[in-house]
Image 1 (cartoon, helix red, strand yellow):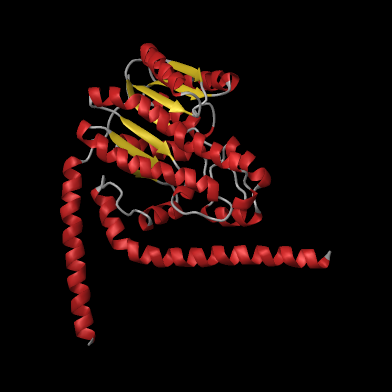
Image 2 (cartoon, rainbow, N blue to C red):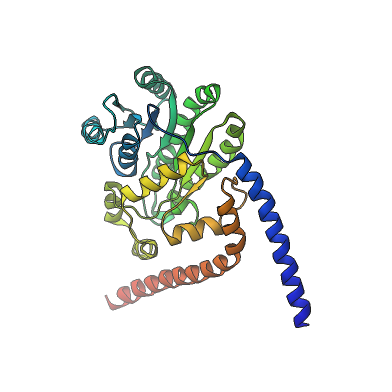
Length: 336
């Protein structure tokens, strides 16, 4: 019996290896070679702070012309001055546009047109604008649910829609979406937020298939908690359960997230993560995501089973946190 099981495992290993090699060779054949940003135009929504601002700084270091989009004109100008300090060539330009990403589509089209008139054809669009609101679902107003979807999903969808035709005509460039680890795994207190971030992944997967024949790439970032002004605001009224669960992945700097994201985007990778928990989640949740890396494909094939088992321990821990917090609240009520 032991020999039979061993033979079956060996056969399974050989089959998985052959399949991985086949698709790996296929993915490698079509993989995008690392691209240069020198002299290219990059547009970044949410570029006045957080991940968006540090992504703009990384692009400036790589010689790109940059247009940043956000609502607050004062923060935009401050970010523009800071970004220019990292310019690597004298001719680089940074423009800023005060726009609400969830506003009218006509205004967004005008913004893209004006930015391209100033800085040239768009090469890379990075959808970084977004915010988080942590609360139990029944405590989240319907208006807040709609706003989360409007900013986090529709904002990215509108800007992407406005730039795609031009990119397809030029047959070069890419689109970046900043989702969240909450776009891979829904947790307590993030029901409304996670829905908006899960939606980005669905949009990105479909777009990747549509745009691949035109030599365009799509990258989705799934960052963990990141030390940004938005994160500080989010923490003001975050449920205890959400705070304890999200702390498991640690706190990363926006500089780290932005640097990794730009590297993955220029290499044409579909998923971009930082930290072990992010990598684990991306493997377990990879599903039918586009294949853009032979090495990543092999890792996914050989680690998915064990990572699923590891994730079960995480889920058990999270469930215990929720139950413990509920018990503590009940005990406090009884003591009063």
